Length: 240
Image (tube, rainbow, N blue to C red; front, top):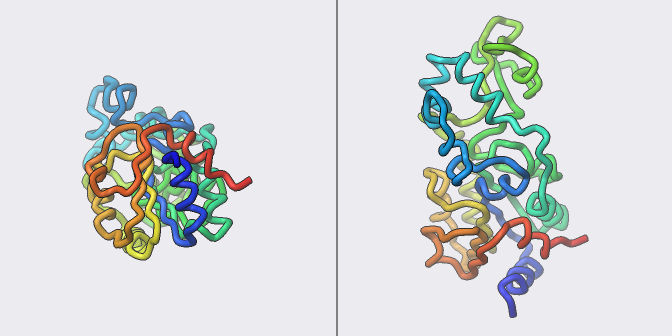
């Protein structure tokens, strides 16, 4: 039996699957990975992306933050790939209980997934720091300089910047989903970003599947490791 066939069998036999995904899920939709060879971290800017995408930089250099953010963080033409679509199908079939993602692009929602736990927020949500009014991403795109609320407050993307903590409610929901999961599939992440990667320690089952192009620190704990494109792998799990 091939590894793909083993994965298909696991999915067919389980009614309580949780998926935990990282940047590799989005790269196949044309969204660059920060840490890849062609990623943002290997391009040259006046400041490193880690600095620009930090809370301190946002507060002190807001206009420059938005110049970078509009140019490099919004990929609104990107479309869901086979991984996104298959996960939505598995949820609709009652097999997948939650998608936990480190990505901020909203592609899981666009594919039709309902229970998506976005650890690092979403570019599609933005809010006024003064009155808390929410704005769609178009408010960022259609403004110049620093986007302002009707009340005069600064609009901030609802994404977790460096130096900011993760949302407690989202973390608790993620912990609960992972702790209850029968099968945990981890895809498109090297599991190097904490505290998100630490969520895996809460998995109590014995069907841990890793789908990634490279090795991860969790390989020794996995029951099944598939090295390759997550979109190609999940294409084999499609139900229609």
